[in-house]
Image 1: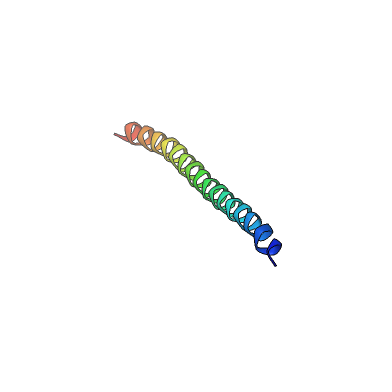
Image 2: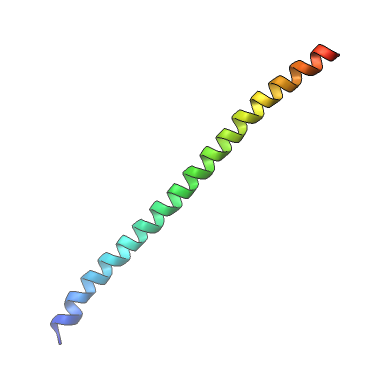
Length: 60
């Protein structure tokens, strides 16, 4: 009986550390995806704004 809690304690500590790492990886992946989406949106907005400005200057 003494061996079982002693062996399960390091295993649970390891799994909690692994769980933390998994949560951090997931959060980082989500954050990077969000940043990439924002960068793509900015890039498309800039190209859209540039074409819109050139059309207005041609007509004005």
